[in-house]
Image 1 (cartoon, rainbow, N blue to C red):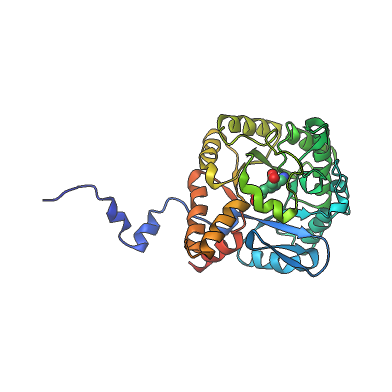
Image 2: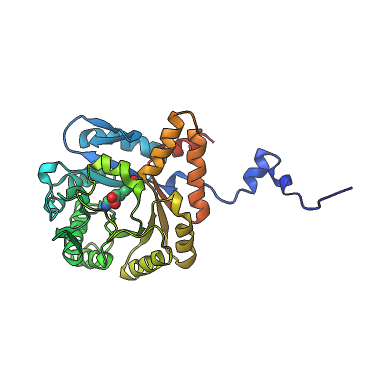
Length: 327
Ligand code: PBG
């Protein structure tokens, strides 16, 4: 008796054959490493809800960047922690050409010119209300916020950022940023749009890292409802038409269907953000000895590629690149 004829297990018999038929691969250049920067000197603070992840003062950042470059990471996404005294409703500090973000970009481009520098464009770290826009009568007003965001993008481009990454979810901001950057002579600076960014509870640890939790209410009037996927396609379509060079889906693991839908419907590089809460879950379970951290990390990163992501912003960038290099 010779049954069955088709035996899928034949292609799984050895490491060699499994690798030959492997459909997706991870490479360090897939990863975007988020970087948290704070004011001050000679400090490296671990974020309690993100074990193994740190905020750096600028003078200590070089070493971390060198480690990333060493393992093959080619791009970083910068976030800054702003002291309470510099926050206001209009995000004034965000437009300061001598601000921490602008200084950080100049530092990185001067010392590590080949590293692709992306900057977070959003008002929440600068907002006394912790919102991504200007607050008027308890509402987050769209168009005045877009004006600030467009100026912010220009300020980052002027400092030398290669791409700006608006994470605010105001309507029309991509078009406004494209226009403002073009008018300022930065037509070659790119935009990675957080197009489908959901109002997610998975951002908790990040808000600890930047002390940027909303002071009142939530972000549901601008970030997307987790129940929607067609709406994500409308967001992506608008952002592409307004001039986005890449689009992003965020969070990652719970939204793989959205990544897939975006990839299938549009011809544009798609990135996914493996957010702080996803990182925290894996770290916490590993600390308890309940999961094998390295295997779960690599499996989740592979899931992003399988779903169709071209790029992955992840706090695991360095660890995963090391694993890949050892193979
Ligand atoms: C804010 C911003 C957030 C993240 C990136 N940019 C949080 C938020 O929208 O409240 C979350 C990233 C993460 O959780 O890793 N503009």
